[in-house]
Length: 253
Image 1 (cartoon, helix red, strand yellow):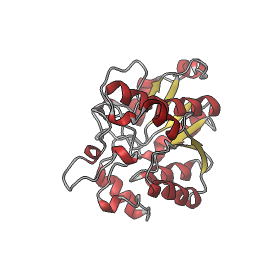
Image 2 (cartoon, one colour; image 1 turned 45 degrees about the vertical axis):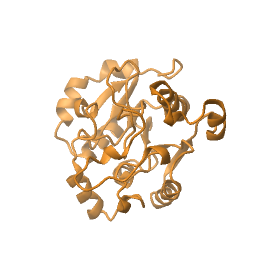
Image 3 (cartoon, one colour; image 1 turned 90 degrees about the horizontal axis):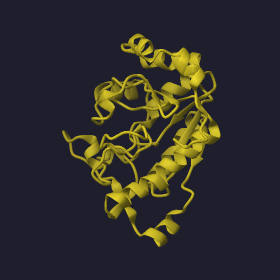
Image 4 (cartoon, rainbow, N blue to C red; image 1 turned 60 degrees about the horizontal axis):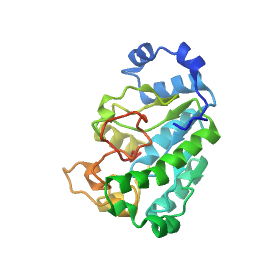
């Protein structure tokens, strides 16, 4: 994390992560969200990719914290449907939306470096750094939260399978309300609450990122196999900076 992000030593001394995670291990998403609200107050943010099932976390979180800042990383390479879907959900949930884009425009990136997503591992890493990691760092500096809500689920990647409901990542608490949910639970929640899927979902896009790194999947195939930027499964924003795990693509939530 960038050096001028605010650290949270006072809370790290007060919060016993092992005890908190034991308490929240079998808690409902609503209970985890209420714990986060009661612990961090207004110093919380939620990230959303406005992907396949993003309406789920937005609905859950805004029911507990209606004005929570929602950070949307606009790489400039998203599907047109994603931009329209983000606008639809922003109006539906009256979101306190904060859009962060790369400091270098897509046109300038391609003029200087070419199509980084078609390059080697170093090029892909630069792509993630420019388009996702740096804008997220900037959001955290400017909004200065003590905690960050993310809709990660254990079954999405090997890295996520090891997470707990509450973690400390680079000086900021990460809270994962739906970590233990599978696709069936997510589907049930979406259907019960009449929540919309991303428009491309019905066309087989079950994990949706940038245009050049997303493709449809078939029934029975891992949804994240449709994300094909490099060899990784995480984009970097959900990984500790010292992590050696080879996961690198952001959450579809």
